[in-house]
Image 1: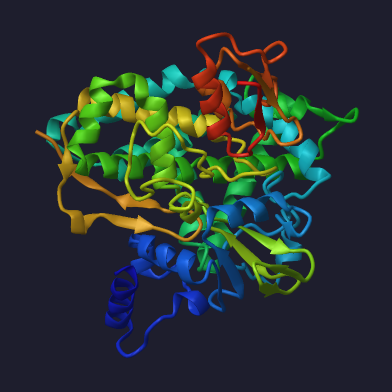
Image 2: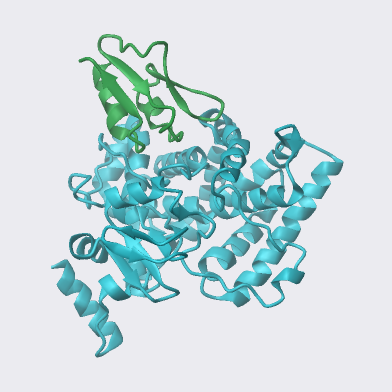
Length: 414
Length: 65
């Protein structure tokens, strides 16, 4: 069934051409972005480590156990390149003042990874992120205030998209009115710019210039924000280099915005279409943490990449050195070999070792922040807008590739 | 029954702490450790099993029943 649907729509799209997803997948295919599930089902069954030459040669595992194994094997599968499509640096890249800025620890391998991650972790613990909970709750309500009397809203643009950049701005100690600028930069880096270097280059330059100025200002006049705390940190008795710090600040912005916004958006997309689930959350508010995990499992937003450090055979597939491997954590989380009824959202699901935040040494450092923002966003929305539905399902648009989630999500409520 | 967190495997997902904060504690980096010697007080056996089942790193083990 899944195969037929897939072929039918690929044929419809390409005229005569039929895409074979096992040997020629394209994760930027608009139909795949909108509805990747049938493709994953077919691949898991037929070709669990698929291959493509689209956007550079890459491999894509879709089974939970394979994703788990590859994520643990950081010696063969490096994080020095993590984007799902290769980026050609501009010819004058070396002339840039920010040449060589990376995004540690997400872009690091051990041994750098180990200390670079330790720098960040204490600032993203459950306790550390709880400091931002009240303000996130107020923010959610102030956003809802703006549209609740209209009877309609774009739950992605007017709500989900607004929350993470403001929380990140608070953490970094920069004004909330930077939020829309952050969002624009991040979209141009990771969403629109992933396949368009003309958008990506300037966005990267502007974001790094901004962060560079912020770091310089904190050196002059430290405050109690995260940038100041990172400036005080030492590794083996030495302060952290400026270029490292700049990369880590870059990571905090790019990893903390469209990811969480996508998760909040997908959660509301689901709830708009499932009155029983809305009711369950309203009647049993104590299950919210299970519900957040289940929504993360079912609508995992993030696909990362690894590159092979050497020739390696995995799952019978001959990978060359420097081959890209797309870490399809979202597909792993729908694997029927791991989860009962994987396509069914069961908000009080108890067995749920999902890997939406990855697994292994690169487990998302911001996972507790993301969970807090999701929980609060869903709770406050349901308190104020317990009953809502999609205004027009065909008006919902999705972004995909590195980070999947709704970008337009018009909903109506009585 | 006793629970034990393998420190080599724990990556700080914090799932065990959320389902069974009586049995696990977190250090400053978010890595989990069993409370005390890991002994599961009567009545918390199911929580211990849930913590094991939900750990994405397969880092928690149970001894005894």
